[in-house]
Length: 157
Ligand code: UDP
Image (cartoon, rainbow, N blue to C red; front, side, top):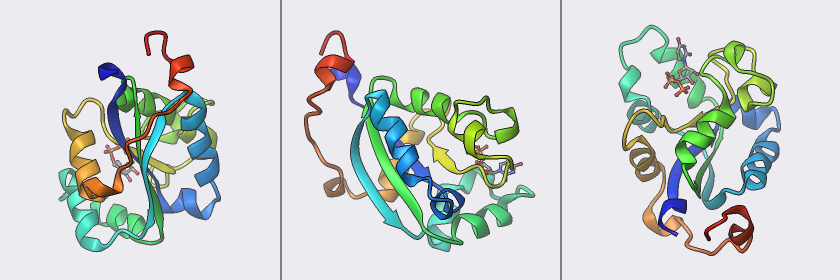
């Protein structure tokens, strides 16, 4: 099942948690046919925030972004499936909810660039998914299991 095992890091941000959107967001990925292999309800500290968003250090929105992402709990997840990183990004919409069509997570739930509900690894940044999974999860926190419905999700499973 080699091409069905791509893993991507996804996180409901503090605004999504506060607004009660964890369940809906998890449902969307489950219903799509992706397999959950890790999940953690946690608070991001200053150090992890700087590591996770290191590429944005020095930009005008960086301090606000760190304050926001550390302001309340997040729900971190690892999802697995065919082309998972790119498919999750499509389901999220664009970075700015204002540019995100209805039907996407940011297009359905967000109005503001700074409070855009969800994070997902960038599929255009090679290795971002593995880097972010390693940053948030120890390997023993990821669960190997067979999703029985994969035989119906994939033609060649
Ligand atoms: N962000 C912001 N102002 C900006 C650009 C980005 O507040 O001008 C925030 C936004 O919440 C975004 C996060 O910084 O989700 C990380 O930006 P990135 O470009 O990595 O977007 P993403 O990968 O989250 O779509």
